[in-house]
Length: 256
Ligand code: NAD
Image 1 (tube, protein in one colour):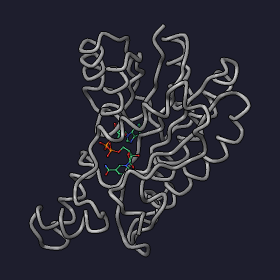
Image 2 (spheres, protein in one colour):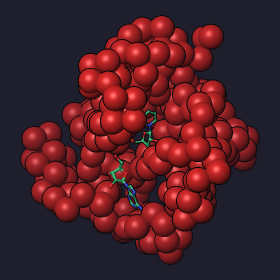
Image 3 (cartoon, helix red, strand yellow):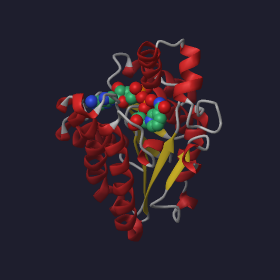
Image 4 (tube, helix red, strand yellow):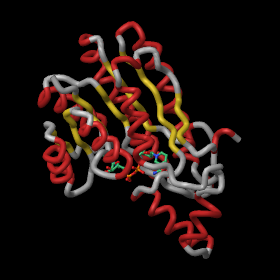
């Protein structure tokens, strides 16, 4: 029987990279995201790798919708082995101007949805004595940067949550780990590059080198494949003792 992976925010960027890698490895995939063509993206990956897929556009700002997403996955596939809490948003502003509603939605999507999804999947994973929860945090879960109050707070919070779930999951073969990427070239970051270029009055190339990748020792965006490979490793049966840990895939940023 194929294993089942649910990846939030998997119709774009990192989530889509992870979903494709899991499909290639033979997992059936519960796709999720707000992209308008999400169902088509899901179908094309399913057709390409000959695996079963489903799609949801649940709004992670709403706790009930997060719970329905988990229920839908278990109903459609009959099981759920891997939950990747990946969806996230960003907003950059000095603290004194940071809009409260932006702060609240970053905390809700980047952190609270991870709690609601993991909590809802918990009893199912506990009963089947297998669960792999993988939280996509960030190097900003380990290090701060100015103007990112909400994001850095949420991503640090996710790392704390990861440790607690690892402890509680240990008797039931539920592991929980965090992946902490440096910069990955996705729509989320493309937007930041454009904003930064405008703010600093620089070319896109200059922004990438002098601003975005300044803190990474390796001056390259982190490839999607690197993150997907890490997630695949964490999902394996043989990874039952890897738990409660944060993996920095950040080109050496947090080594400093
Ligand atoms: P992205 O913008 O390409 O994708 C984000 C996904 O989240 C999309 O599918 C979007 O529809 C979904 N999403 C956003 N708001 C939602 C909501 N309210 N309800 C449901 N779905 C929603 O972003 P990405 O760069 O692939 O980021 C994925 C994750 O990786 C995020 O948690 C991000 O913080 C983290 N991350 C990204 C980078 C990077 O450099 N790109 C670095 C470190 C961590």
